[in-house]
Image 1: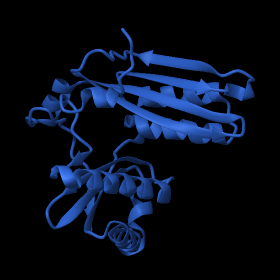
Image 2 (image 1 turned 120 degrees about the horizontal axis):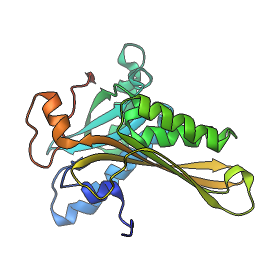
Image 3 (image 1 turned 90 degrees about the horizontal axis):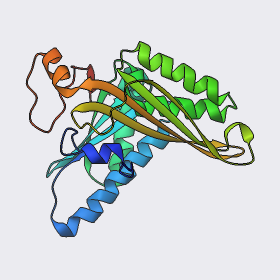
Length: 233
């Protein structure tokens, strides 16, 4: 079976929710889509080390709600909320719309495949050993309670002349089963020898088990998640 489809896109609308939640007429869709891309790019570039795993955007007729899922909310909130107010103003200037920010704190960054991939990419940029980096990351993910993890590196590993792949697997990674909660993340490492791609898959178990452990029934097509601390401005 060929794995040519992005795992997240394969599951969106079935067991995963959309990252942008809004509707628009056909003539406005392209403009709003480009706004979403600008918002995500601006936030990721401004807060590279804040551990942002997701930027979820919701739109109403009057304003835009942006949910930032981060492992380090203090970097975004700032002292007495000054930083988040500044970010809100910059996004309003960028889009020309009223913005509302909501900071959602991640309980464990090793539950997010995106953050694990970015952490490995940063280690490779600092010329760390790629084998040590992926082995340590896999052990930390498994210690965090994951059912399985798979990490794949592609590029000129260790400064080799020819590009190759290095892979490590721990536990189970059933990529063909849509009822399993498999999180996927990708990051690029800009090293002196070229770009190294980092792909991470993390298996969190069955969606039904997560719903029963939360003690609440999730709506069809949505993932039930444990409550997280949020800071609204």
